[in-house]
Image 1 (tube, rainbow, N blue to C red):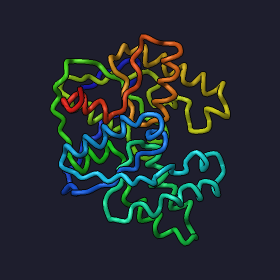
Image 2: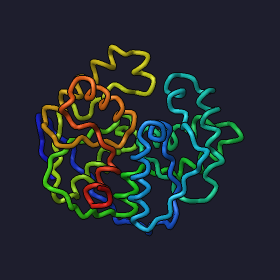
Image 3: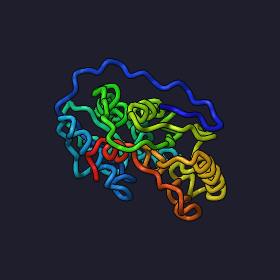
Length: 266
């Protein structure tokens, strides 16, 4: 279900007929998720394994190179991203539980590695990258059986993930498949939270004003839970809430939320 609060949401996506699910997938956990919220990564793995899929997590993975790339340092991004190219040797989908990192790999790696000896590997990986919520919706046609009590939730989507991957629609669709969950639409829903990778460090005053506006809009919904599928946004919004709004719920990753609602996590 969806309920509008001071805003009009775009129509929710209608899931396509599911294709034959793969037996194996890779998970690219992203550096932010790995360092700051590994539980969300583990919950993504648990949820995928519950669907009968073997999840492979290359231990040598690190960063996709997005912070350097979006800061105007393509050579540094090239060197960081190059370290990931040999990690996905099997022809399995590469699931990324963060839309902005998935967008970097899918849409910017081919450009980053163009005219280099790594172009073929980068293009191959880009063709196999699938954002987590889109994999659940479009590949698995995931139908969560909601075991939780009725609640209202607000969903924040990374602006980069929204533009490049359309993750807002797949996240909305999954949340709206939960029988006892109503998605409330906060004001300025499509606007950036102010994180933007290194933007929040280079322009802290602007970033602070943006996240203050975002948190105020989320607070106005009185949502029981705040859901996101991007670790950077969760850090930024969660940090502001922890500092100034201790009674508000902290952002929760979509994987964790789905696992909790379906009884897979206490």
